[in-house]
Image 1 (cartoon, helix red, strand yellow):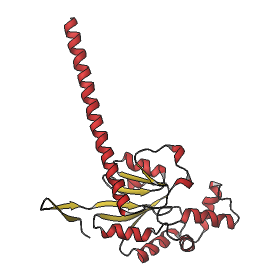
Image 2 (spheres, rainbow, N blue to C red; image 1 turned 135 degrees about the vertical axis):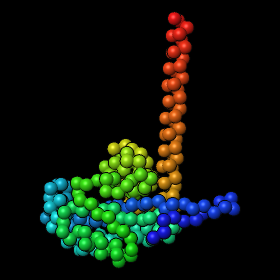
Image 3 (tube, helix red, strand yellow; image 1 turned 90 degrees about the vertical axis):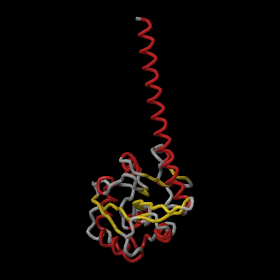
Image 4 (cartoon, helix red, strand yellow; image 1 turned 90 degrees about the horizontal axis):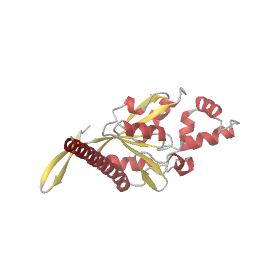
Length: 230
């Protein structure tokens, strides 16, 4: 696998290292969460009861669930397009809920639709930012909890809401299931999301520098004032 790519700027060639880009699976690539709720209700479970829904997830055949769910918003084609840019090491980063059929079903699915892509799995109580190195890596996520942890770990976190990209910490009240979008609309918007995040980080660094300088100036003024009074 290539570790980087060549770009031309000002008649010079530059080597740029590929960025690690992780996609969540359930609720981002595959419509498994909403489909599981529907199937659970049809099977007599209460999809709004956490324990009952969890019990259904433990019992359902994941090959069947993935087949019923299908991909969200033509996600596989969009991942292929992002891979073809040559700028990213694209990987799948997905949690497993304890069902013995889940991991094999996911690996078989991705081996078929995205041959060669790395699928990284973790247990339900493990954290994505602890399984892989999040620093300067991108995570496309629909979970607010994972989104926040990734950002705090110095990763580039992109949470998708309906019609807009959110960076840093969005308002809890705005994160409702029906507001979440399912996938990146196109590569241009994805690039914009990544670049805006970086710009916000740079702006934050600048503001912190300005704040330190301001505090230093205030301390200096106080010191001079105190010396004069003495």
